[in-house]
Image (cartoon, rainbow, N blue to C red; front, side):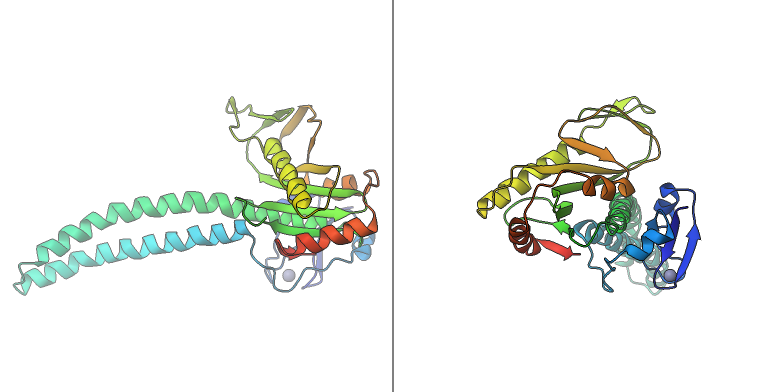
Length: 288
Ligand SMILES: [Zn+2]
């Protein structure tokens, strides 16, 4: 029977499946990250502990940035509203310039509202992405001790970041997290949203493959040559169907990833793992 656990409060709940974990990824009582396990016996085997101060990833910082912009918009709208009584008061006192304050104040209100709704929309997108990352991080904790997880990996001089990289005896994995609503059909690296009858412009599979290639190139520039970097899309969505598997990129639900990684073919020796780890540590916000 699967469970969701808050380690800080020592609470656990029985759940139907992984989907419930996406909804309750954070503890109501203490705000800590929850963990999903297939059984309590599996929980007792976990060794990767959540660091007490979880550093914000790039996605988390972006969500915070838009939240800050939303608050700034609100402040501007309040200023605009306050200018109305102020200008009336000044007019009564005989200040003719008060009309300018009134015009400016009224002009500020629609501008600030548009600004707020734009920040909210973009901020919600990033916040959702951040939730997805947290869910994936907590699923990856189920990997055995000889696997290392790098979160929010960014290479010097390159644009963008990789959500997660996993390194261990079965090789290197680049994980792209996507948290989408709607019903999807995935054919190779083409993603279709069939409830809206449209094709996703940016293919998550193509993005994961590009990130895998970037990681391979980066390691080569550090004189570490690996034959293959696996690409995975961690897809948080209740309704999708894969009609044609992409040969070079796997799409799966977050909690399926540890099992997939563990049962892959052995690929990397200890010496290479150690070297890759040293190089990647400097490029990540967080290493587990
Ligand atoms: Zn708690």
